[in-house]
Each structure stands twice: as structure tokens, then as C-alpha cells.
Image (cartoon, rainbow, N blue to C red; front, side):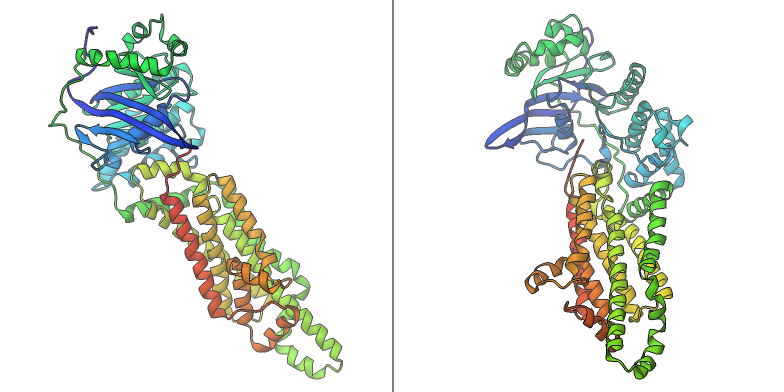
Length: 575
């Protein structure tokens, strides 16, 4: 077969040779990609098509480096990526099926965020030049001030492409970016990707289920059950499959097994490639001007600034934080309102009252009421702060997992990402804990050693925030992380022993994991001896020394942050 014009030029840049991607299902090996061999030159626009479940997205992720091939080789301009270093993050643009922009940001802010995280610029002029170029090349200048949440599907696809163009990638991989769009919007996005592929040395690969409108593509790769059954120009598609129009290719595939189709293609592949110049050698002069990834500090401040901006623009979340900050301390006062005067006058009037008291029963009753009041006030503070900690971080990583995974692929370091989360949450923890201590202490005047009381409240909030952040990092979904975190908070009060003493064996088995106990016990241990005596009259729970409480709570924080780092570093692509 001879083509009127070759659809490949003479420099093969991307090549896969006998590539497999295999997963285990029981004792069987399942080949999601089976013996993939293709060649793609630069300045090329390729579509990957095929029935649902044929391996299109799996192949795209393998090229991107998200999936690692089980066998075979992947080459870039003659360099074996299976043996040598992968492409730089800035050399690859990857547009997944899901949105990669935050609803609370504007179009321009989303692109600016992408530049700050992915491109090291010399000055502000260079920074804004990249932003302006991305807006112009994707036709988003007129709507740059619109929030992402009000954009149409087509506009969000354009924004996703713009956010990837900031690094000027040599390889642009797009996964179903036209799905769900109306025909006009789909045509516009395909044309935009075609124009991107005309950039010097760039390859654009688009996964699509649609077989309509393939004319702008330089080549079409057809997959069937993980196997290549065709890779050639779109104009030859109907001829190869003996159909009247491209839409009939999928029904035709079902008439023969994938192995038969693959065998047929392997016999004819060399003919197609020879007539289209595919067997040429890589271009030794081909170079990539990859953008440099910013350092740890610029990425940290970019992530931290974006997180605060999102929080202040998310009116629902902001109002919830304010309501918790004001309402929870008020709840402590409300439930102990009748005893407020007693605690405020306790330190001055109690000794005189004891000298004047004649009846031992009244003394015992007074002491019991006092001990229960002080213990209850502190435990109520502690439990509400653990609930605050859960609310702070249960969804912090899991809720933005998809965007985070995409940003990791683009060069965001997990350690920097986690550091920005810790900085953001530390500010929340301090404000919440300090206000809880100040508000309750001002009104109730709990007779505790104030520095220890405040520090322990900060530590229990930080411990629960860190543990729930770890859960958020490891959880598969945000809802799962929230549910697990709520369960964890729910066990704090009954297992702390502050209300009812646990059996000795149960206390020793559970107490190491209960942050609430260590804060409550530490505050109680900080009371002066006469007040501590009253507390011991109403509880049989053994109180730990405050120094040990500090150590245990710090260990809890460390464990939570370690789990969060493990979860953040682990790849968890979910689409």
C-alpha cells in the first residue's frame, strides 16, 4: 500500500517495543497491554481508540511513566527509558479525565499556580509571560477572571491544556479530554490539540472513544483487548477494516478474536511503516528545552498560599471553621454553667469554708462536686479539640488526591506538599487550642498550671490532626477518611477512663492509642495537690505524670506525620 503523502516524518522520537503491562488476578497473569510495538515521530498528533476496557488509558499512563511496563522497552529519541532516567516532569504534559483545577480559583490563578509549582522563572516578567502565552494559545484570555466552578466542560478542558503548556512539554498526553462535550466543543478541543502538535518537536497523544472527526489526526492507534490491531493514517482506517465508515470499526472488531486481529496487523505493520518512513533512525540533533522545576521553598510557599486562598474563598468551609472556633468553647461553658462561680471562688474561699464546715458530709459532697466539675471541664475541652483535629485534616489529602497525584507527576515533591499541609494545619491547631484555653479559662478559672494546660491542649489537637492527616493520606477516598476519623474520635471519651475507669487489662491495651487520656491526665497531674486530691476522689483512673503525657502526645504526632508521608508518597491514581 502506498500513501499519497507520508503521515510520518523521518525522526522516530517515541517508540514502544514488545511492551507488556501485566497484573495478577489470583494465580493468573492478565495482560492489560499485550506486546505493544509502535513508533511515533515528533510534530505528530496521534489518537488512541478502541472499545471500552481495551487498555487505552493504561497505555497512556505507561507512556507517562505512571504505569511501569512489565516487559519490553520504551524509547525516547533512541534512549531506553526502561533502563535510563525517565523524561523530566516538565517535558511531559498529562491531562487526565478529571479536572485538575480548584473550583475556588480563577482561570488565571489556576495557570499561575501551575507555573509556580512547575517552572523556575527568572523574574516576574518571565512569570507573567508564560501565563499570558498559555492563556492566548488556548483562547482563555477573555475568561481569565472567571472562577473554575462556573466554566463549561469545554472551557475546563482548555484550562487543563493551558496548565500543562506552561512547561512547553515535548510530549502532551491527553486522556478522554473530549468526552462528554457537545460536537462543536469537541471539534474545537481536537483542533486546539492539533495546533499544539505543530509545535517543534512535540508529540500530542489523545485517548478517545469516539471514531468521529479523526481527520485532523496524523495517525490512529486502534487497541483491542490490550493488543495493537492498527496504527496508521485515519484515511486508511476504513480500507484496512473493510468498513464504509470509521464508526463501524468497533462492531467489526467483535467478529474476530483480538489475537487474530493482532496477528493480521503484525504481518502488515512493516508495509505501513516502510511506506510512511517509520524505519528511519532517531534524530541526533533533537533537543529538549525542558523548563527547570522550582526548588523546595518556592513550591512550599506556592502550595501554602494556594491553600489559604482556597480556604478563604470556600464560604461553607470558612463558616464551619468559625462556628467551631466560637461554638465549641461556648459548649464547654454551657454544660458547666452552674459550676462556674464555684471554680472562680474556689482558690480564695475554699480554705476558709473548710475551717467553718462542721459536717463531714458537706465537705465530702463539696469535694466530689468540685473534682467532677474540674475533671469534666478539662475532658470536655479535650474531646472537642480532638473533634476539631478530625475536622481539620480528615479530608485534607484524600479530598484532593486526584489533583495531588497529577501535580506529583508534574514535579511537586511529596515532602514539600506535606510540609505545606503541616504549616497550614499548625496555624489552625494553635488558633483553635489557644482560643479554647483562653475562653474557658477566663470564664471558669480552672485551677490548673496554665502553661501545661495550654501546651497539652495544643498537643492533643495536633496529635489528632496528625493522625487524621495520616488516615487521609492512606485512605482510598475522602469519605472513607472522614468515617475512619470520626470513629477514632468516638473512641476517645469512653476509652480515656476519665468518666468511668476501665479494667486494668483494657486500660493498658487501649490507653497508648488514646490521645484524649494523655492530655486529660497531664492537666490533672498539673493541678496543685489539694485540687488533685478532689479529682482523685471521683475517678479511679490512674493519672500519668505530665512529662510522660508530653512524650506520648509527641509520639502520636510523629506517627501521624509518618503515615501521612507514606500515604502522600505512594501513588494512588484513581479516575
